[in-house]
Length: 291
Image (cartoon, rainbow, N blue to C red; front, top):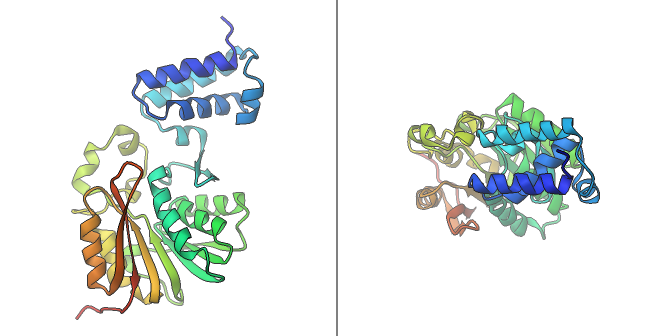
C-alpha cells in the first residue's frame, strides 16, 4: 500500500519511540532523508507525495539496521556538531551534544583574542577544533590524531566546512608526547579515550560493536590520556595557556587534582546538559616538572 513521506516519517518515529530511542524525531527524519536522497527542506516540501516502493524498502532496511544497534550517524555517513555538518565513519566517534560544552568553553575563552593557536588532541572527526575555528576568526587550529582513518575524516571535514586556511590535521600520539617543532599553543582541548578497559564489554552495543575502541579505551582506570597530556605536553603551552578536558562520569575531581599538581590554576568543573560534570579546565601558571 502506498504511503506518503509524512506518514512514513511518522510511522518510523513511532517505531523508534517504542524502542526507547530518545532522539526518535531527529533520527527518523535523518533516516528518511538519507534513504530518499532528500534534504530536510525537500522532505518538508514533498511530505504529501507518495514514496516509491524501492525507496520505502531502502528506508525500512535502514530502520531495521538501526534497531539492531547500528548508529544513525554511521548509516548515513554524517552528523552535525555545533551547527557544522561533518562526515562520519566508523573510524571516528560520533560527536555528542555533551562535547559541545567543551567547544563552548574554549570558544568563550578565545573569542576576543585577535590571534591564537589551538591544539585539539584526540581530534577524531575534528569536531571540537572545527567548531572553535568556525566561531573564533583569529584561531589557527591543529587537529592532532593518531588514527590514519580519523585523519582522513578530519581532512574531509576541514574542506567541507571551508576551513582549509586555518585548520590543519597532524598525526600525533598523545601517549608518546608531542612531535618536535610543534610550537606553543594558547589553548589545548582534549576529548580523550576515558572508558576504563574493564568497562568496555558492558557498553551499549551501539557503542561497543560499532564505535572505534581505540577512541574509547582509557586504560585500567580511564585516566591514562589525562596523565599523558599533563606529564608530556606542557612544553606546548605557555604561562596563561588554557587546558580543557572532557571527562567521563566520576572522573572530574581526579582530573582537576592532576591538573593542579602540574601548575594549573583557576580550575573549574562544568556540567553537561544532564548536570553531569563533563568538562575540567584551568590556566597554566607555572610548569611543574617531574623529578
